[in-house]
Length: 431
Image 1 (cartoon, rainbow, N blue to C red):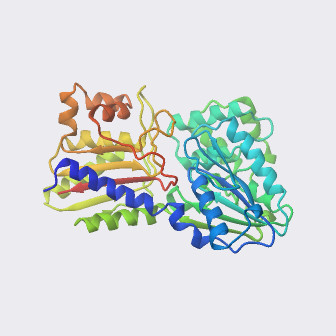
Image 2 (image 1 turned 180 degrees about the horizontal axis):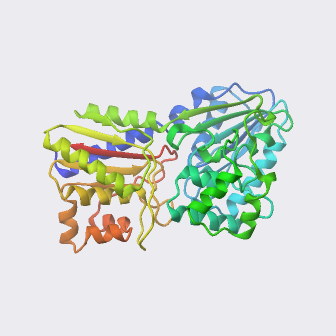
Image 3 (image 1 turned 90 degrees about the vertical axis):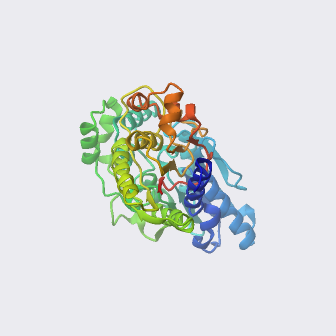
């Protein structure tokens, strides 16, 4: 029988397998098109932007023998996620709240796209986090106003699809508008995306800057109303302006524009399942697209785990997706840590059950920095150790203070930036 230290190592190995299956250095090269006669203009956004740009540069330089002078572009990634990418400039910008660095870099992205000609290839590299990294507010909307709307949506518990529907209608780059810029002078446009959204909908990944958008201004306004968001007047005016409607299917901007998803949450979770099976567990995969309030999903998963334990199974319950947290307290944490805390409370220290919940990008909220933890471990001794240290698990959950709770007992998951993003990876080991 494994002790708790061995169990933690196994949980982390399964998480690492999940992340590795979606890393650009491993999966991107086979999807890259042949070099054009002109330039390769790389435009990247998201938590994997720098690693995708680096993989692209190395492929065309090493495998294709391309002169680096024919490669240009800019990759905008989250602060703390930069990597060298040759002639492709890497910019660190704000996430989840956009900032001035992202604003200036996005203007450069739009200029590069608009300046590409018929001999050039515009290679758009999209990953989760791109919505915050690429921002060009619609006319009349200030950065401060857009930041305020994003912050209010995050605090409301809105899902990523809702948030992106609003953001893309307050933007000059989201919702297919980058495609319009790139195709203006006849350049070929190829988009390669790492999905971080349930269902892998291209129009939702980074708010779909290069694909048609089926969502509408009316839907954006309905989300704002249902989530009780106090809109700045500039944003309300923009959402009521028909000129800010996004390009729809059939628009000429999307002619001769190719799009491919190169990594998905489901594929990453399948790699985690292989690692669990190799360790001798039967796997029950609940799917890569789970949504819902973190503490509610945790309660249901605890019920499944306790039932499996009662039957004497050696089982690994896996799930992905992106959970949400409705903030009620003043503590720090993210959906994965809150899930883990709620799971620990619901399991009540049951012997033979251990779990990990982590965000595959390496950070799970809190301060908004790249040093934030990715998630947390749950062990049979979690509640006992916490109470011995004077902690009240239920009170910590009520205060949304999962980071404080798991910091105190040393059970945070802290891999650092992983340079990819395929949403959450949750693993419960029974037996």
